Length: 388
View 1: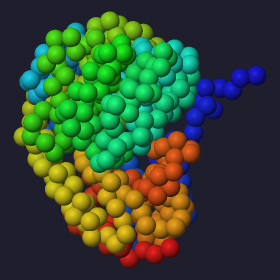
View 2: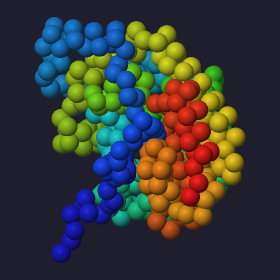
View 3: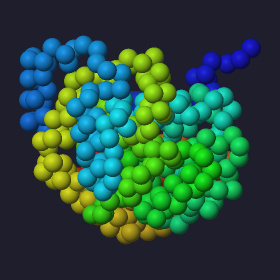
View 4: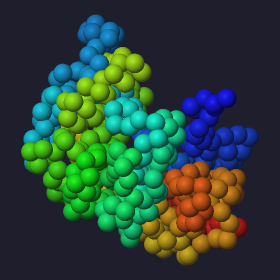
């Protein structure tokens, strides 16, 4: 008797970590929660006012919409990507989804069958691995190189006749690493040469520390034969609860994804789509300020981590820092003890790697973007003071 698909994978890591808080009294030392990369503040006041207007004055936000999303939002994404990446993207190459996790699931459903393989850099975003498990897809781990950046040469030896895609996340979750444009291009050429897809998750593109485009893939006139790009509006406009993401890909692949999207959600949430559209058209200056603040927090995180005796900063960018700890105990035990003994909730590296990974027990992911600069200083002070 076969097991249900959901039993093929592990429990959601963030939910598991939250259970560590049960019954803990933090007293006068408040919890520093660096476990989840999600804005804790609501959308900016102007966007909330626009959303209230939409709820009261636009009846269609309460109704079903097109499966592939609001046409005006698809067009806005296409125009923005064409401008920002100095390339060419059309509205027919964009679909809107109920969050970026759904975008990933739809893309894989359009690419893979039972027993197919997907190459996933380690450390990985755990929900990607979970979807593979529940879909009968074999995850092929790709070890990252220096700076937590994967290399196309290492990926090439992992490709088999069952390989359907290589996945990159940049800026990366969980490590924060920003992959150089030439690395992304090398993976694109590798995928093209082998007739497989390159899935590039750019959820955190708005907080990339570079001023130049992160890559030049959209300037290739045949980009959509190989590239599937994913995006989330959740971080940029604080719309996490409204679930709005995007897929940029070929019309043929979007037609396949549409079958999945129609079955799972029928359409993306209408209110969130209209809010995302208004944000893209109106909040450019506000978003630039958000980016500057996140980059300031990144600098504070890197500076403070460098001063921690015995700790090593492996990667830092966007919302995340990835640390190697100096203690002779596995990271799951360390993470649980930090809750009660230091008032810190962080995720162990074992949640982002295969069970047999030798490095993960020495690693922690820190989602620092929800802390202000004084909060980051307090976080470092607690780590510096803690001893097993």
